[in-house]
Length: 112
Image 1 (tube, rainbow, N blue to C red):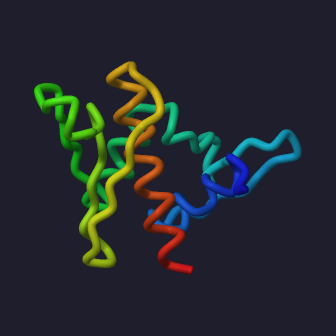
Image 2: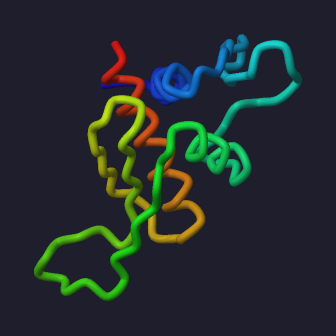
């Protein structure tokens, strides 16, 4: 199982961010005083989505029998593959950030 820091490292790899992990286990963007937490920060999640061309899809009115998530993120770049991630949380803002983050993680994983 990959740790949260491992997921951050994969997302950073996909985004071309250079991060380091401090002694307390926090991720920081190298050369700045900015903690890197795109799964929790709206601005960082939006920049991550923009950089990786991740789009958000809403399925609010989809019939339950289709089994679609309420919110998911879809990416076609940089690997010309579509990746959809079902967020684990219900709050819209949190679900969107989490979906973007997990899609970035999958892109980073496919780069290995």
